[in-house]
Image 1 (cartoon, helix red, strand yellow):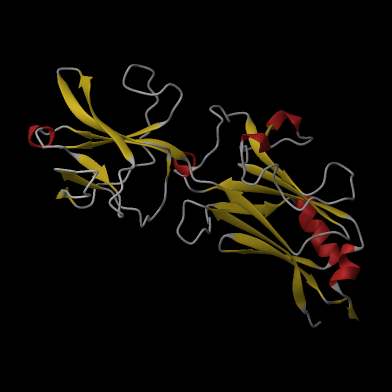
Image 2: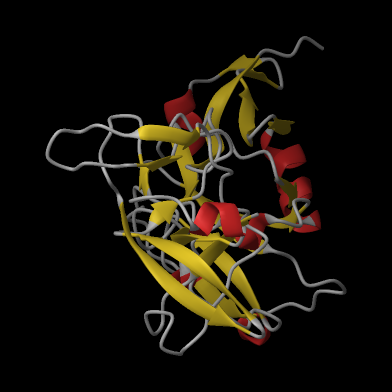
Length: 278
């Protein structure tokens, strides 16, 4: 028997944290009932880098058929996803502290509605609004999945869907700890264009010591590889733009190290990335 598979639908995963925007940290698996359905309907599930494809046999049982003919039959499919990137929550903007009893729920149709959504999640990016209590699903999972995708194959099925994740943003705070750095004359932290995206300096007191701190004027997004570069300078003159470079490339914030402190040294309810320079 000759098979001729063509694309029914592509599901891709994107993340603004990565330079190529591709997120390869998810593994989706069709449920047992969906696998049986695929067998009966001549469909093929094919995982790929940063997503998966559902293809249909265009020569099913010896008869040619088009994509339009395939989607004319309304079929409900379910997939579960596992997460294989343990740093995911460190660099991803998800404002939910406790997900122990929740899973992400993605879908392109609400219940039995035949009108399909153009997105698999509720907002531009996946967010806490896409979380659902695992107990609300009508099946038991031996291992709690990261996500559940309910995909309805119907006449309005798009050929491409995407799960879009956004990188977390934090206030970056560089803290100069070395005495030689704290004694710099008119220090500043500037960007590639000589502009000053950090406020400061200000002294912060720690147990038994102190540091000279610069705080970013706005939250900065985490990035796998960033062309944005910050440098420490002294003798900074904002009017003439003159300065002397002390450190040409300051280290970037670590997504695994985020501080949330409410005291005189921080802005309440802001995530901080503390970067200590000795």
